[in-house]
Image (cartoon, rainbow, N blue to C red):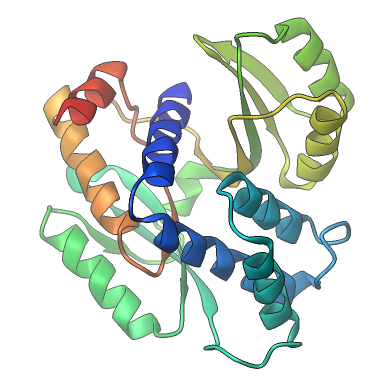
Length: 251
């Protein structure tokens, strides 16, 4: 899974420095609105809201914007549109499975935009359940190996209820049930360990390996989907090689 995490880290660093920051803030604000609407405005009692606020802080989102999004979610602020959360399943080129999380006020527009991008590259949307069986919903943390002891993180993660801890090249990765996210995050925070990536996400049960050219085509399709305003997160079962990452970075 480190290929996915590495690529996500590259995109995050690039995104933080470019003109899309406003778009990143909009995306996170929608997450906060949905989380607060579903579970209330207290991040200590609402794990999903706490995760969204962590993302906001990591992106240097202004505190006023975070507070405003929470109030919109709880109903204290009546302004703004009524968003709904949608999960779509589909395929990118070469049969790569996709799980696409969206937040939208117009589901017809969202579906049309997703179909357009996928169909022009040889993919398409699928029926509910057609793709999700290939993924597990899991808590995930990625911590840089440099400056951290694997044994220390392993013991800490297992004590916090993690299912698995792996080291792959420059990352230590922690996996667990969705319900374990907050307690693992709290243990890491108390130990002053800052993850490079964290969240509750869809992880593929088995990855698909393609040659570099085909991998790049799929990654560009995913990037086009991620550029849509309504798309929050995309998960795939593509095995992303270092060669493909390097080639796409050099484009």
